[in-house]
Image (tube, rainbow, N blue to C red; front, top):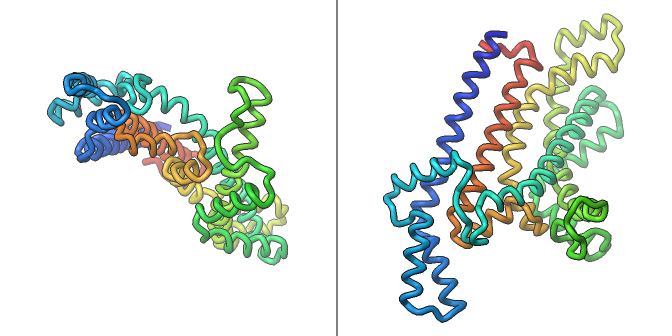
Length: 334
């Protein structure tokens, strides 16, 4: 047990180092960009209203002091980490004066609710069917399932999403194709609002499951096909154990360990895939928020979304990494 705690300690240090380096890199990329968020705001204000030169200059000075863009880059960097440790990245230019972290907090449940749930569901179903297909290679139903999985898996995600939009949005208009809930439903803790959310999430979730299922199925089937030839599986069969016991305790348990690493990467990819998903279906999550922030030149909001995404990705990988020594005794913690 002491060795395991030492293992956890080393991984924690790696976790903090990864988060620090990734957030620092994001800060440098945004602040070394030629786009000035203050000038972006002034340009929009000038286009919408006839401001005097004095008013424009006063606004420029006020915004520069508020966001610290008139300070040296190194001073901005230290101020950024000071604010970040307090959980305050300043107001958003996109929805001034709403704090950036408040906007992220409102968008995050949509992204996590849709994409994490879809990823975990795809992982469980894909690995289960893949394990059964690998352990029963002569089963006709599972063979047909594998052919369908191999046919869908290489198709780009956005192609599948657009096909579903066309089919269920125009030819068979049964499901909503845009937004997170119906416009005539009041947000709140009610069955009407919950039902509207579920209805609007069906198409995005189905598109994610269809594309992601094939990879898990094919990967697990290949792993199981290798595991069933190992000596301990052969010995269990000769010992007369039930096929269900062999499949669950000997085959799937050993084959699923490498898939956990892939799950960590898939959960990390949730925040990169969210941009495409939410743009296609106009879903109100972090992906849509990030695109709006980039288009608006909102540094504070870009850094808030990036910081949350980086921390979530690194945390997911860390949690899965901690499960490896507990699930597989062959993985040593020393």
